[in-house]
Length: 135
Image 1 (cartoon, rainbow, N blue to C red):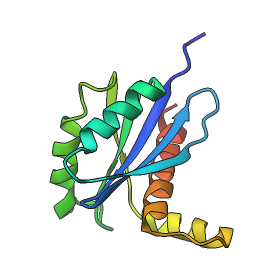
Image 2: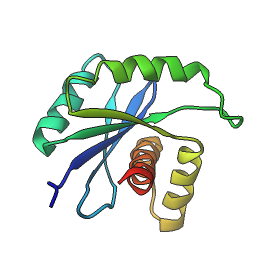
Image 3: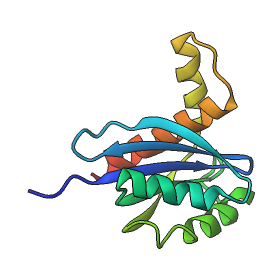
């Protein structure tokens, strides 16, 4: 039997990074938090990786509605490259429409939410999509 893997999902933005966590035995991604993009984001992600014993980091990959790279794609690719030594694997997962879906989910709950909540929920959707496709 293979060891349970711990996963961290990231929705990378220019202001903040949504984060979600999951493990392969349960296969349910849970919004965790948001990390401000303030020059300390790599340190904060490294701390999440260590505290959560993370094996795989899943980074949302931005594309437009035609499936083509966006202006954010190159920035996300560069950012993901800086994560490669933090975990055994750094993977990409399409993030198309995850913020829209995240906001709809939050609206359906009927509780107040803000942009940070949307980003964390989007990270959970990205991570859930990854697990459903690859695990």
